[in-house]
Image (cartoon, rainbow, N blue to C red; front, side, top):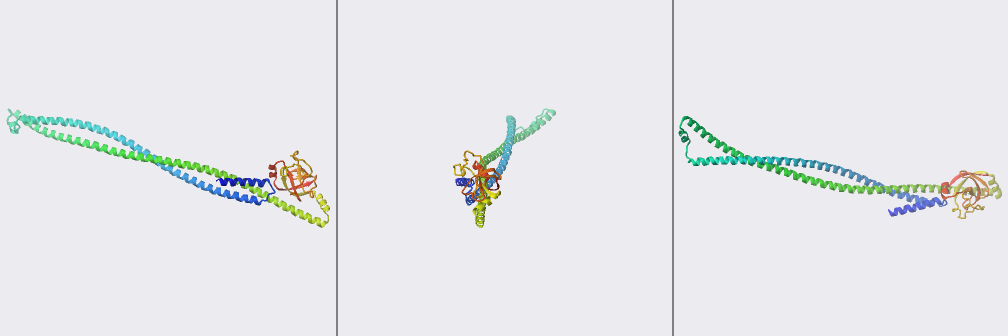
Length: 382
């Protein structure tokens, strides 16, 4: 990355230099343009790769969000099931307590019936235990007593059988109720244990998803920063590329103007040879009042730094004066000349590069010189 920035800085320096000094060959700006375009191509590749990574991260985030929503929904459902199970456990506890109360009541009844049976057995043993059913009947004093004795014996026998049967039923019911209560509690405890394990697993998954999402969010932020940096560099390089292209075009125009001036000079030399006198050439040039020339612009610094023209005009003291540098063989020094796009000016300076139909207009700043560039303008000698 540092190498790229260095290359960009160098390219910037070279391009600005090529713009400021219009006499530099445009072969060098061509090389600079190629270098800038290569750098832009590299940055565009990096940008495309970064954008792909951002898209992948966004896709992963979307999948993670779906997984998170599923885990969260499962967690809510599991929590609801746990609450339902806890309610069932609470209800079962109430049922178990009711069963325990019923067991206590049954045990009390069993104890009473057992005591009653024990009492009857004791009474029977105290009576000798050998009184037969016939003895009870024939011991009656009257018919009415007989009927009463028979009825009593029958009831006692039936009562004992019923008592023992009920006693057995109660004892069995106590055992069944206790077994049922423990089975219910075992099932609910098992269910709650499984749901708590599921709850812990889902909670752990949520934490993992959160951590992954945080990592991806950070990666997305870093990639977005990288994308912005690359876009900024590409924008800067695009500006440099455009500037380099303008510089190349300006250099081309200057080269074309130079060649045109050389052709004009060669043509003038040929005319001079044909006419046999240079004086006649000057006369012809003087008679040509309006014509088109190639124009560039210069400042005090580019003129050598003295600020005094070939005719003695002090440009430092007169920075806003309209002065042009000319070829005296084409435009006489001291002439008033109207320059298209510049205005009326004094032909008060010369230059080593100002030959033939070429002029250099004086401007007060390098910015204005760059803005003027190289152009074809019409001049009229007054």
